[in-house]
Length: 254
Image (tube, rainbow, N blue to C red):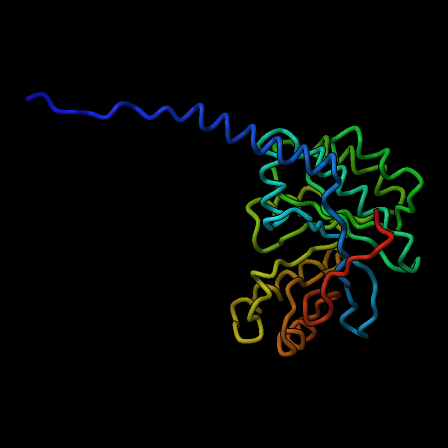
């Protein structure tokens, strides 16, 4: 008796349908502007001064999905830059609600820094109040175009931060190639640092590296007092996390 083999599964139609559904959801979200900016405070560790805020996207679509999931879907269907531009514009809408001595940190991907819509978005904005946090949605094969795009912004006073240091696959190359002003230490490294000597030693090395190049350190994910105390002992410059302040939604931010 001949053996029976099931026919190959036709996966392409289902894949196409999934992509169309994702694209439709992203387009609807963009059209209805179903997102807002939340702002998480950032404090100086030495004296507890409020020095800035990080803009975070909050998507107002049910059932709830994390913003990372929405951005991932958007990039899968070719709408990632569109979603980034719109959420950045929303975040910038809240800048004038904060005192002029405070900075606004914006998450930006390498793709968006090279997008022709990005630079006009910052026209008329005091660049000295901006920190551009480079994320890792996509890898960087050639840093020269990125450096060229960043130069006029940094000349205007904008600072560059490398996000998720200690977690991302490429951020060490970002650090070496772009010479950032700020290193943002990922919560995966700061978590339990007060009881983990190896994590503390790694962060101590990053702090020493940063001092050599006049770079500042921001620690993310601060949730308990002993963790905060240990980060201060290690010489971290700035901190953010639920212990210090949760993200706030501001009514006037568009």
